Image (cartoon, rainbow, N blue to C red; front, top):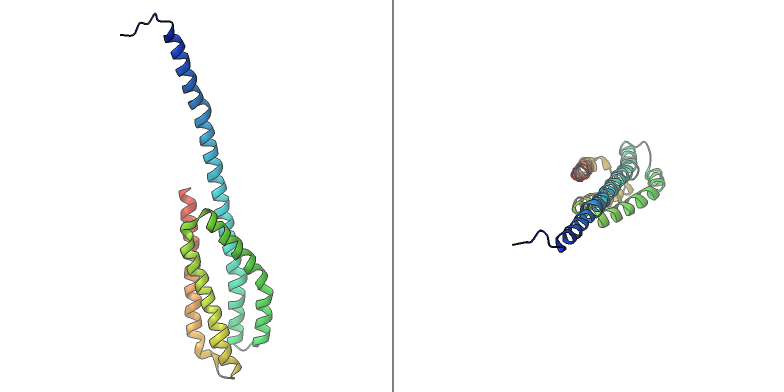
Length: 174
């Protein structure tokens, strides 16, 4: 049995109280504050990623694709199309490189969807610069390739929306 008159009891109670006070008064609030800062940081990075992907799609995808429809409609020629592509290249590389860094550092779960999007974008670029260009330069009608081109554009649009949806989903979980 514990003797409550023992002089060590108040000392032990003070020590235990000090330890509990330090844990609940300093360490836990500090931990919660750091966790809150980290969540805000991750949300900020997601917003940055969403913004960069939107810009990449608007400038590096939409501009070349819209302009390529002008080639299909014979409103511009191949050289004018290439001039417009060159104008949009700097935005593409900057935004995609930055997005890859953010994904690899903070959101690895989004990498597979991002890679599918990059692969589809590369696929349509290859289609334009190999099959369509060859047909165009041979003087043949490129409109026969338009249905396949439209399907590839639709695929990329779907992949973009899927990636943006996953980014929103990750943001809601933070």
